[in-house]
Length: 267
Image (tube, rainbow, N blue to C red; front, side, top):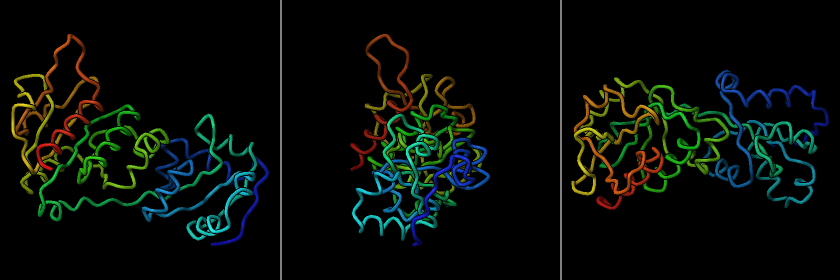
């Protein structure tokens, strides 16, 4: 690692570049996204993903053990000391924790051939648009041992700060890849995955059936549900029973219950 570089001006180009990463367009252009807070930074360090810049607020830096400073400096290309004004400018949260990093997006590979040699669950998310829902689904997927997550057709941006935070660092712990509907269907079928979709029409109560051990669970858009393409291609349509009269469950809740039901049946 290098020495500490101090930045004092909001006009500094490094600060401006970092502020721009709040927008998806710039994240895509740069191949970088922001990770904020001590716990998430530790997750990045643990994951082996590459860090470009680390920004630490000067009071936080003064209170940091030298061994931790060393670890952080070794892990990044540039180590910046900043004031509170700059931290507020680049932070996405109300009460900033004093540390923030820019991290390179990995180039994910979904090795279905490798996955196909073992049974397991793949989660396919179709146009899930709420960052909170996406983050929660990723968090539960990691908790329940999901093998991989496929994002189809304009889901919320995986690297938006809300998704990164909502996933509790889950994005660093499970392979996540974007694919088209047809590509994912082709590859799942070729690897003998049974495709399960959530649907209200002619669907079976998930508590009354045996779930396949090699399974792809497709969850659809919050408002419109799973698309016709996946409904047609599905091996099984499932539904969670509802006793009370209420709108169907939030997709992150329903998805979480289904992932846990898979785990219960196949653990």
